[in-house]
Length: 233
Image (cartoon, rainbow, N blue to C red; front, side, top):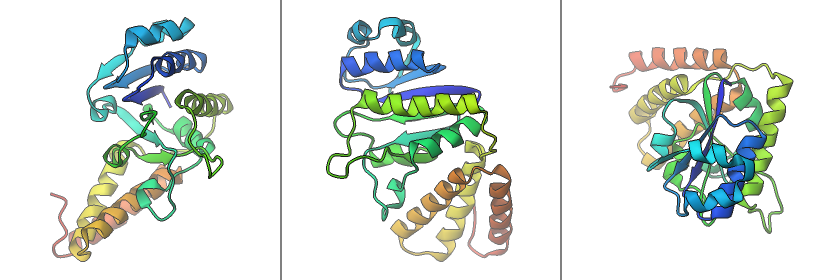
């Protein structure tokens, strides 16, 4: 990982935003992006302490898509995990950190709103989904607490010099295109198509092996070219 980007979507509380900036300073975050905040950045300065300079440099944008521009890997976080829901089938923080640290380029770590988190459409934009295991009766952690846990795991991983070679966003994008082309040619149900595409992309992102994904992409591209009705155009 060359750079770590912390992305906060629709943050509602000035204290959480200020503490997030402090944590970004604590754990050497390179970039802070704030997406359509519901609170004042100026008010958050009161809670940022020596993280104020991080907050002052933060980029405020309108959409998550803007915040993810240039990222080679994106990891969305959630308190809601469902094994039967492909979109919400997460990895734990320590695994997310291993993949993040081993990735090339800029890694974006995305956190949603305190009240409702990230929407399904926002989660779909990320390469990976991660959640912090907690009491099933009360699994939701405070935003700043969640940020601290993830940044600490990544900070530890940077120090351990973990050696994986995970696929980047470009490779995952190509894999998604060929998978979608194949399932469009053989699967009629739209929801099933989308679930299969999401599952393949997430499996590839979790693998930690760029070479494995390249082999899979090679196979899918060969099959697609020989199958009638399979087109990535």
